[in-house]
Each structure stands twice: as structure tokens, then as C-alpha cells.
Picture 1: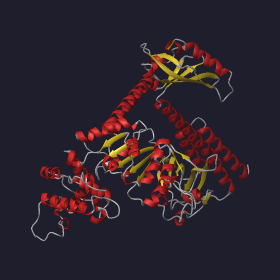
Picture 2 (picture 1 turned 180 degrees about the horizontal axis):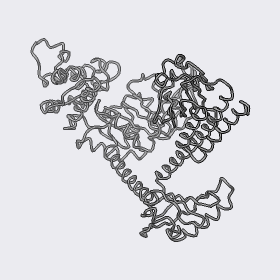
Picture 3 (picture 1 turned 180 degrees about the vertical axis):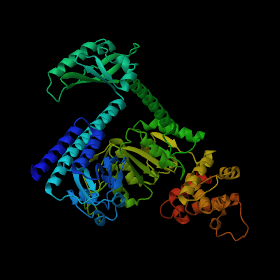
Picture 4 (picture 1 turned 30 degrees about the vertical axis):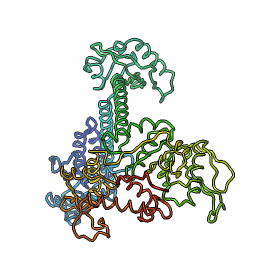
Amino acid sequence: MTDQERRDTAEQEAIRAIVEGTATHTGERFFRELVRHVAGALDVHGAWVTELIEDRGRLRSYAFWLDGDWVDEYEYAIAGTPCEPVINDDCLVRVPDRVIELFPKDPDLAEVGAVSYMGLPLHDTDGSILGHLAVLDTRPMPEHERFSDLFRIFANRAAAELRRLRAEAQVREREKKLSRLVDSAMDAIVELDEKLCVTRVNPAAEKAFVGAATDLIGRPFDTLLRGEGPDRLAASARELGALPEGRRYVWIAGGLRAASIEGEEFPAEATLSRFEVGGRRFHTLILRNVDERLQAETRIRSLEQEAEDLRRELRALGKYERILGNSKALLAVLREIDQVAETGATVLIQGETGTGKELVAAAIHDASPRSGRSMIKVNCAAIPANLMESELFGHERGAFTGATQRREGRFAMADRGTIFLDEVGELPPDLQVKLLRVLQEGQFEPVGSSKTQQVDVRVIAATNRVLEESVKRGEFREDLFYRLNVFPIRVPPLRERGEDVALLADTFLRKLARELGREIEPLNEAAKTRLRAYDWPGNVRELRNVMERAAITSRDGRIDLERAFPAARPDAVPETVSEDRVRTEAEMRALERANVERALESCGGKVSGADGAAELLGMRPSTLSSRIKALGISRSDDRS
């Protein structure tokens, strides 16, 4: 026999020995037999097969045979070892001699006295590296190709088993996930055979039917159904047979009436699907107990009704949250707002300056059917008389000098909404006529236009004048007054609202403290008494101003209320008084009253307009009217 024939025979015997030695083994036992036979067939000092732990850059052995014995639980870093180029370069690496010199950073090589090395990567079906097979020897390793070819055969056998193990692990992982998915489902999942008997249940099904899996498996499922349930289930199973593969699932119309082992019934939504395994037909029935849902829906409806009742009650109690107070005088106003808001009636709000007439108007609008539209506000005292008509009714282009384009008036803007005419008593007589027409007919003509415009507007007017007296003096049209005075509301002055003064002051103080970023102590009883004792000629507006001054001048969280009152300011003392002493509030009030009376006398009782008392005193007519009423000055003998 030639040398070649002897080598061929040895290789064949080595291959047969490996095949026979590993044929009946899998997993760890397979790899142990493989590396032991590889070491024997190649006549090397050691052999091992590993898996790659890629994210850690390490190799972990399945089996390691070295010098006739096993090395257990062997794991090592790839860097610096002869295995590194095998993995990183994905190729056969053969070091026939002096391996320690080439890889001096690998301490294990010197420990075993290694001289030569060979390693080959093991691939998955997609080409990724699973691990490697390697051998080492304490002698130089033959370099002929037949040696390498034989090593490749062993590596292919190892790769095949590694791929099988990886596939099995993936299958087990999928099965584990599927099992967890089924077991964690909140719905009852029941597996049925072709005779619709139970073959498997998840924990939710055990809970729904009040029985362990052993109590349910093997039981015909129709024994757990009531009414039309058995017929619906059987019909759905037959329906699945007519459906194409991949679409064998149905919703069981009308659901099922199920019953637990103990006989307690419950309604359930249900779906049924079909699949085959090993030529056998199975069904998956998924049920959801809707009894709890129906109860929850009933409870939700009940809670929604309770919430709506509560919201309705809250709206009734506090829908005018911007209007603070609980005095009898204010509550009477709120009742009047409730009475008139839902109607379309014209409202005339009367009250002194600063009492909150605009808030009342806004409350009426917000509670009315027109709340979805805007409330347009017009201050009749703030607009010059020559521009008032254009402001209210609009104008055409070129209607007057400066009218370079067409403009809509406030009434047109308020169409289907509300218009609030503040200080309506200041309207000039000619505009009073036009306003009367709008109230009577809902019509007007813009300035410079002959085309009549129709509008649907609710009018809310406000004034601090006593319009009845203005009518008597001929300053305000009687017919317009009656048109506006359909539903009069008198807003009480602050001095008539008792404890509301302290409530409002506290509210203003807290809000101002937040705005100023300061910590301010609440009002004490002495401060509240002081606030209630003042007559508040400027009403709520004056109260807010006083509290703002108090907040600004506060020190260490405490307010100096006396310093905040108008009477405490140096400019409150009339310049005509030469005495240096500090005057009381009553003296200051008497001085103011006397000054106003002198102004009225010098103007013949005329309040507004040229040569009127307001002009003489340097204040707005509306402010003077408020002061006249607050100071109790009688105007019965006044002349216009």
C-alpha cells in the first residue's frame, strides 16, 4: 500500500469514527464526541468548539478536549488570541509553528506549551458567524491541504449541529413567547378539537369558567353554553370549513351565553378560528365576558348623569364666578340676571361708577342663547360726538372727510349677538333717535348710504345717570328711555353690600400678591372693619385701587391700609386749605361736597358740555354725576 493510500484510508477511518461517534448524540454530548474524535483523528494536543458572544467579544466553549481530558466551562476574550482573526476576518487561520511568538498576549498558549494552531468559523444559514472549531498542538502542524480539508469536514459537521441548536432555541423562544402571550391575555382562550372538545385553556379561561385546566380539558364545550350557544358554535365551525386558507376565522354573531362549571351564566363576545397540526383539525375560541363591561357602562352612564347634575348645580350656584359677593343686595341682582338672560329683552343697568355694570352685562350675555356670538362693547362717553354715528352704524367710503374706505359699525358687528352701550346717557339727541329706530325695527342706514340694513341685536345699556331726571330735563328722549328700560337692573353701590367689601378686598389682595410676587398676610379684623366703615364713592373700582396701593406699599408681608386710603394722600387735601393740621375723613368729605356744590352753582346746575361743572372741575361728566350722588347733593333746584 502506498503512502497516499494509507493517508486516504486514515482519513476515511477518521471521518467514519466521527460520524459513528456523534450519530446518536445531540447538543453538548454531540460536541464532546466531536472534539474528542477530531483530536484523535488529527493527532493533536487539543480541540474545542465554541459559540460567539458577539456583544461581549468573547467565545464560550460547548466542549473542550485537551491532553486527554475535558476543560469545563471555558470562556475567553477573543482579543489577542489566534481565534481573533478567525472571527474578525471570517476565514480559516492556520499557524503551523511558533504560535506563541505570533500571539504573545494569549497566556493560555504558553501554559499548555502550544506550538501550532488551526481554527475555522462556523456559519449560520444567513452567513453570520455562530462560533468556531479550533485545534492546537505542542508540535508543528502539517501544512498539506488534505489536513485542512479534513478539518473543514469536521467544522461543517459542527456548524450543522450548531445551526440545529440555534433553530431549536429560537423555536423554544417563540413557543415561550406565544405561551406567555396566551397566558397573559385578559380574554378566555380555549383550544377545541374537531369535535369541539376542550384541549387547552389559558388562565383567563380557568377564571371565567371557575375551574382548573384539568376540570375543563376533554369536556365538550357545548356543555358550558346556554340557550342558542351550542347551535351558534356549531354553525360557526361549519362556516369556517367554507372559508379559504388564511381567512378561517369568524365573529360569532350575537355572542354566546356561557356558564361556569358552577352554573353561573355570563354573556360573552366570541370569535372562532381554525388551524391544522399534523393533519388534525383544531379550533381557537376567544371569549370576552361582557357582563363586567355592561355593568361598567351602566355605572359610567350613572356617573355621567351625576356629573351632569353636579355641573348643572354648579352652574346654577356659581355661573357668575366673576361677580363676587353674597350680600342680599348682590344676590337680588343675580336673581334678576337669571330671570332675564334667557329672554331677548332689552336691559338697562343702572348704578354708580365702578359698581361692575359691565360684569352684569357680560353675565347676561354669557347666560343667554346668544352666548356663542360676540358681545360688542361701546363706551358712549369715550367717543367724540361727531364720530359716534359712524362708530355705531358704520359708513360708506367718501361719506365724510377721512372716510377712505367702507367701515362696518358696531351694530352690524353685533348681528345675532349682543351690543353693550355703556354710559348710554351720554348719547347726543340725534343719535338717540337712530338708536330708537334700531330698537323698534332692527334697521339703520350707515353714514353716507341710503340702503337700509337689517340686524338682529340684543341691546344691553348701562348708565350711572338717573335717566328719569335726564328725561325730565329734556336731556334724554322719553320714548328711548322706555325702550331701554324694559328690564331695569340696579347694581348696588359697595356701601350697600356689607360683608362683600371684605370678601372683595381679600380677593384683590391675593391676586395682587401673586402678580407682584410677594407674600402678604390676609386682612385682619381691624382692617376689615376699617374697609366696611368707608363709604366707597368709587365703589369696586376704588376698592381695587386701594388694595393695589396697599399691596405695593406693603412691608414684610403687612399692609398699611391707612396709607392706602385716598384721604391719607397729601394730594387729597384741597390747595385752598392753608391749615397744616391733618383733617378727618368727614372733614374731607364736607370740603369735597362744598366744592362740588359751588361748581354746580357757578354753572347753573349744568353738569356736562361746554361751561359745565365737569369741565370746571376737570373731570368726566360720568365721574361727576357719580360723585354728586355719592355725596348726597340734591339737584332738585338745578337749572340746565
